Amino acid sequence: MKGILLMLAAWLLAHTLLITLDGLRDRRQHADIGVILGNKVNEDGTLSERLTQRLACGLALYRSGRVPRLLVSGGLGREGFYEGTKMRAYLRRHGVPDTAIVVDNAGNNTQQTVRNTARLRAQLPIRSVLVVSQFYHISRIKMLFRQAGFTEVSGVSPIYFELRDIYSLLREFAAYYQGLFFTEVPES
Image 1 (tube, one colour):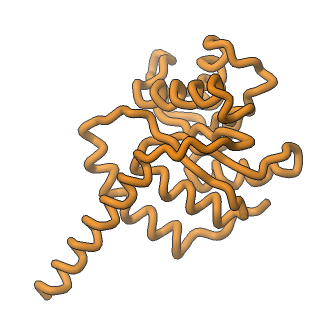
Image 2 (image 1 turned 135 degrees about the vertical axis):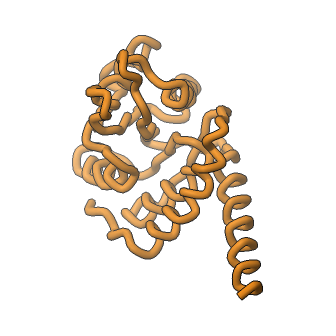
C-alpha cells in the first residue's frame, strides 16, 4: 500500500510540474483566434483580478498581431452577469473593435467553450487556436481542443498567481484525466 501511495504521489508531482511548465511557456505562436476563458465577475459588475489579467494577456496578443480576433467565453455567473459580455466591454474600452471580438455567453465550463468554438468553424476560418487562461489550466484546454479536431493549439497564461492556485493545481490533476478518458469529443 505504501508503494502505491508513493507512486500516486510521484505521478501527481510529475503531472503538476509538467502542466506548470507547459502553462507558463509561451511559444510565441500566432493563431487564427485567441480564446480567452472567463472567470468571476464581481457582484458590483467589475471584473475579478484573475479575469482582468486574462483579458490583459489576450489584449496583448491582439495588439502584437499574434491573433487577429478574440473569442471571449464564459457563462452567466451567480452574480447575474454574462462573463462574455463583460469581457467584450473590457476589450472595447481598450480599443479592440467589435469586428475582432466574438462573444460566447454559453461557455459555462471548459468543455462547453471548446464545443462552442468548434461550432464556429462553420462560420469563421479557424484552423489554429491560442488559448488564454491560468497556467494550470492550459494543458487541459489544449488537450480538449485537440480532441475537438483542432491540430494547431497553443496557450498563454498571464503572469498572475494567487494562493488558491495550489488548490487549483490539485483540482486540475483530476480534471485533466477526466477530460482525457471521459469527455466526449466535442462536435464540430
